[in-house]
Length: 98
Image (cartoon, rainbow, N blue to C red; front, side, top):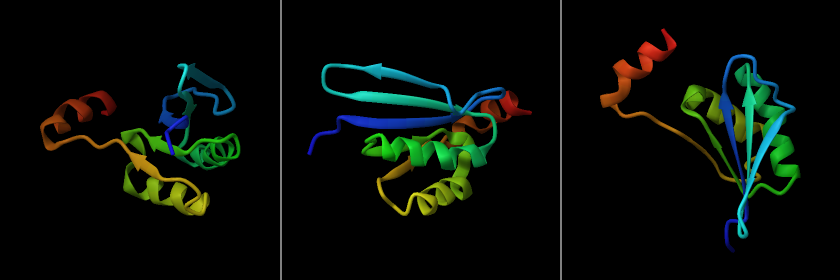
C-alpha cells in the first residue's frame, strides 16, 4: 500500500485546530493542523483518521507523553510518530521556547 494521505499536527500559539492547510501532489494529500494547546491534538487526530489519513506525525512540542495520549485516543488506528530533536539542538530549541 502506498502512502496517499497523512497528517501533521503542530503547536503554534493562536492556532485554530479547525483550520487545516492542505498540500496535494498527484500522489499524496498532506493535511497540516495547528493547535494552541496539546489536548486539541486529540480531536484533530480523530478528524484526520476519519478523513483517511494513513499516518499522523506530531511536532516536537508534543513530547512522548502527548504522543502516547494521541496514540491511545485514536486506538492505534494509524501509526503516530513524533519529531525529535537531537542533543545538539537543545540550546537552540530552549532559546526559542524560553
